[in-house]
Length: 445
Image (cartoon, rainbow, N blue to C red; front, side, top):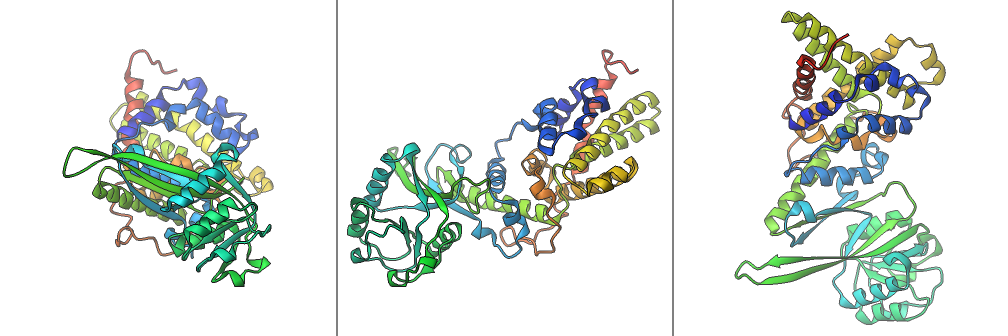
């Protein structure tokens, strides 16, 4: 409710000349992205809402979902959430909200000190503390011996889920043109690496064929996460360090995988944040899959216009005709803006859009409004209201509704009626507009 009031204070604080229909008469000639930046310049405080202390899980979930490709996250019905998002728990840090982070790509935890030194030596010779791999990726689900490592110019890096000796790692780092050997602790991570690189998983080095080598360009980045940990039995401080290797695709807008490092002072708090973050990602995926939320096409402004119109009816019944008239007029620019935004995201062909009347397009927008309100009910006003701006892109808007079984939240079935309604939050927030219209310094023409 507090976030809603802040949002509507920003809307109510915009001058009428800036928020009226005249301000948006040339919006239809803008692209969808230009329109969003134009609106954001007028209503910048709307997306700079203050986050509460308990929104760490929501922030992590929104960042993770925004990193993934919309079609992979919502469109593919056969991809499990665990195949897209991997969580790592690291103990230490002051608070979990400050130290936790979202990273692109696959995150590999490395425990061998020899691998640390070899990777650091590689990174020192590269720019930006990053290793660039332009193809030549092998995914090996088996053991690798020292004799197998040879100067193969077509292979640059080998991810191994199996036994690998220290001598093999040292030899791969010391020998010129030898592939970099990186151990992988889980088969799931190896499968993710094979997916993003285009490689085929092989069981032994003898089975390596040219067709099994991945050709995608990768970026490998060394990541040290260190924090101060307090021992439970005394007041001594211990430096805790975790060494990760971040593997991601280069020069892409969205990553096929995302990793979340959940950090907390004790294991119970870190585990609780991890579970809450996964629960919020499930909620976002269920709502975006349902088709009720179509960001970027005027759904939000339609919901605001409906709330204003409903408030005007309440004022009219209470014999406040002048205030009711002024409040109802605020809904007009909101409706016009929502119609323009619906056109800019490519809803329908150009010929159809030109031949349609304003009222037929308004009917489409009102349908979007109903889907928007239903979607917010699915997630809950307090958790999704100020966060959905990250999903305004047309990539989510064009996704059709799906009948996929919704993801479970800690074993619980996803119910839409257990979260509070968004309509009451919006209607309550428009009391700010009502108060402004009642002050003497605001005159109604």
